[in-house]
Image (cartoon, rainbow, N blue to C red; front, side, top):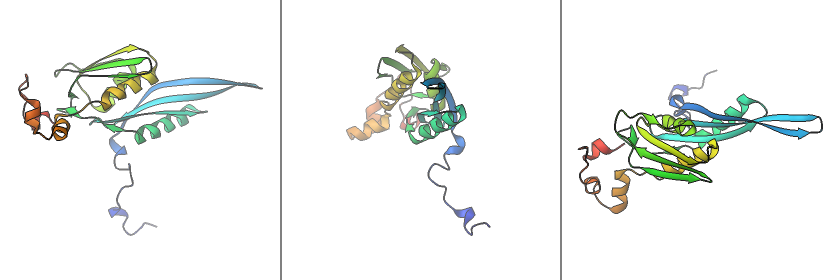
Length: 191
């Protein structure tokens, strides 16, 4: 039996946002625990999710079966999504660096047509975030967990001219000054 206001009900938390979310499996690790009868295998999955419009998250899930590990990792990734300001909805506002453990990454804004120049786990994060032009370099650890956490460290440090202007109590045009590419209006810069 249908409820009376089924068509007018408000979507629950996260229900309306899940429709346009991209999911990428970054890494699956098979782990074995040695028990009395032999070895017991379980799987660990690392997932990245994003809406392609400036929101991205990552999650880690462990289970006895691969699909269950992926499901757990996806749920965690959706819960831990962060918003990153993008310039013209295609690149970062400024260069940034991040680190986690021995993993270090450098992210650089790039002109139109550059593409996503990044490898492995960083590429998955940047593509699901919705960045189209960026140059990224990973130095140190190639462990996917450390690389993703270092990439998120660099992305969390990103700020838009609007945020900086609000923090300083100035106008966006005062913060930007004159840009070399001629995009000095707040509408062209805001992402």
